Length: 285
Image 1 (cartoon, one colour):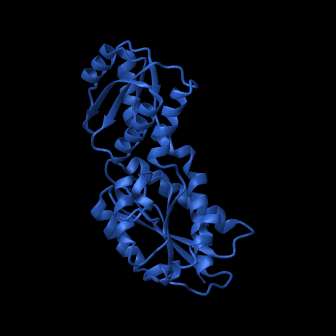
Image 2 (cartoon, one colour):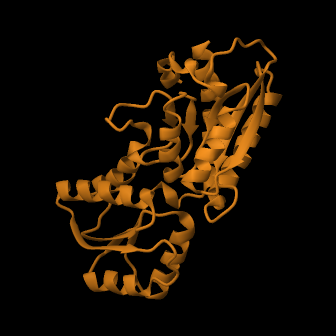
Image 3 (cartoon, helix red, strand yellow):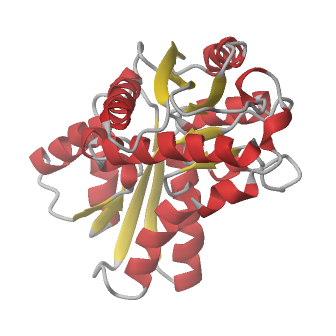
């Protein structure tokens, strides 16, 4: 909540970001942008569902000062659709902010789209390092997230290897070539591993639509790696680890937050995101 105190200047934009005098019992409209259809909808749907649960809990609580209404738009996991959804939402009278988007590519697009109007955005899961930054490296005044960034994801695992908390000697790295998230986590892992002198014996990239990882598994086994670092999402990890096990690989598997099932975390994350939007707006009026 301390972050919201920095947003005193957020209220001068178009659509829902303009400052409005609130009275107890007024309706607050909060937007959602994320994939509800398409291949990344397995992330967008649970995020939307848990926002709805968080709103229901808030509206039914004795402490609720306002009535919260959700306006949800489907991005299909595509940058262009995410921007179009954003533009539609900020045109809604009474919109106070947006919870979302869900994936890094969408976050980069919405970060740029929101520069002119300053609509508050709080994302539960866009982890790319540059999402909250302007092109000159300064911090965006309107874009926040409640998750870690890619640098932290890769660096934390690599540091645990370097200081001996994870006892492995040789690491292979497999990276999804079609994922900004996977590449960002790989870059930060490699940077920290090189700093610590950790031995990286293999680095390979696989296309995002890969189903058979046999050739990659063979290379990992031939490299002598006793651990494999795979920064990707849980559907892909379930497939890959199963194939590794079937091929007789007995090493350690290392990953990042994308391995976790969103269903267990999003209720808390989105409740915080929704309340932060309300706090942000309260600081602008």
